[in-house]
Image 1: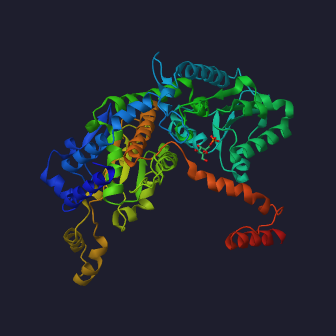
Image 2: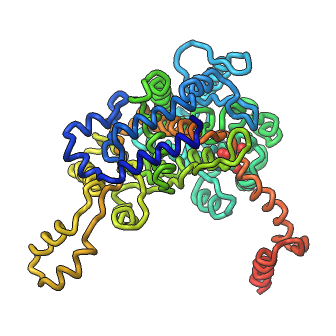
Length: 543
Ligand code: F6P
């Protein structure tokens, strides 16, 4: 059976499942939770509140086997060139590989290089944290990471997630946007003599990053003189020559490799600011957590495999039901940047329109990923999730145990996350709404008028991921879980999840437009909208 036939078969399963509701399925099956939940260590995935039954799930697992998910997964771990358009291996898993074993790519063991960089990172991190490596004005107090996309989002997300492990006297800041406001606001109040910049860029050519890095260097040199630059800059890149040309000292350049995709690079030296913020032992625990999820992904039968289950449920909703978005809703304030991180991971990976063979895909691919932490989202956009016309599958994430001893905050947080998934699943019928309204003493006419507004359709799907505590191992496992989910979906959709040609056109056009924005060239070759906007811009600037 080809993919088209498999997708068609999923639709017929959908037609059956659509005739019932989750409410009914829970009522008729007291074992539903145990049938539709799985675990990795103490991380539990409850996926029972989905529009799914055993038959549909079996069809999804059969689909995964049909597209040879397991051999393809093993090929990735073996270092085969799954990134075909760039002819590269996909080996971010080697960055967190545990033990002394080899990981091969292109006929060579990559692990000696990985271990060497990790060793250099450890020495550097330890020396910065104990003040042995310092700025010209004393121990570093502020670290400013300059990078964008994968050279920013992972470290930003992880530094915040691991806030309980950070030190108040060593603060990490992240500058990504080419908007000068980002750099200016970040540098405001920092002492140049105690600031360390990390220029993080896989290619070391990304315009936003190089523009920010040059301005940061000018800020530092303006305050401390050119001679101080070497003491205040480090770099992370695969382009070692460009780091050298920028003026970064050789012992402050941390390399990685072309088999690490930008959005999969937080495990590499791109994680340096995280390691500086939390210490190297904590960073290693983060890597260990991810390695544990890698083992789970490789060794657990598909039916109990968390990334496989999450990935297949996403395919189910995207392709059989036509749901276009997916919300990630951490009930964990420190995961507030996880949705933004997952936007790049998922949408840059699977936002593709052609197959590996370059033919148009005949099915929907990656959904829009979005989200905000609960409970804030409840007071903003949950209205639409509960009663709007779009169905939005949700992932809820929550820890059993907080880092703070602040009762009753965490119990309230937990009550809220449990309430949301229950409310989405159950909904509220018109009869229930009327019975409730009757209790308020309103007259009949008012009750009739209000009742439709108080009805919740219910039957709205969600997964809940519950873990013990947001510690470094758990964070590593969570991120790796989503990486592998993306792999599973990319395999089903038959796309290359590891290139990103779709970002290139905008970059090319921005380059061509810069002289026109600067008034150095005529915009006559552009469409009338672009010309009109440029005219308006120049008019405003001339005032
Ligand atoms: O333009 C997209 C992209 O290439 C991302 O894939 C990448 O994470 C980001 O730019 C930054 O790239 P670099 O690390 O090379 O500066």
